[in-house]
View (tube, rainbow, N blue to C red):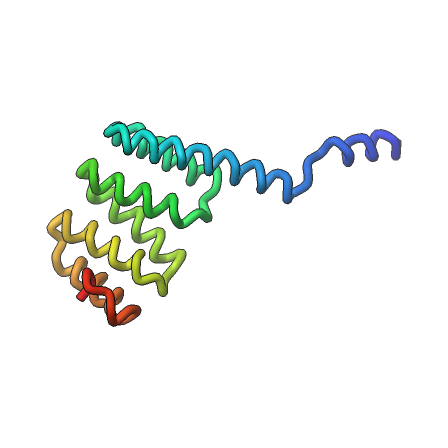
Length: 131
């Protein structure tokens, strides 16, 4: 029985290998999303960025790309949700707070935008967008 166990152990990928493969797939989807966006194919770009996040939900750049693309597509509530998630992941990141403020402003939710900008300005006194 130990020979079979040894065989399965040898064939099973390690956790590091699995994580590396996931990161590669997510990176591919993100690059594809950037290309779609460059070609003006906003909806396809959104789909690619979502696929990248479904594979690797820890990549903050993909949240930023998704949120900005959602804003470009006029999907303000989706962008707000995306940037809220990013802010929860990186509560001390001035860019995340600023992007959330931008999404709120585009959605004409000015009180919430002002709150996000105020947070961003407190995090970085040189953030001219937030100020």
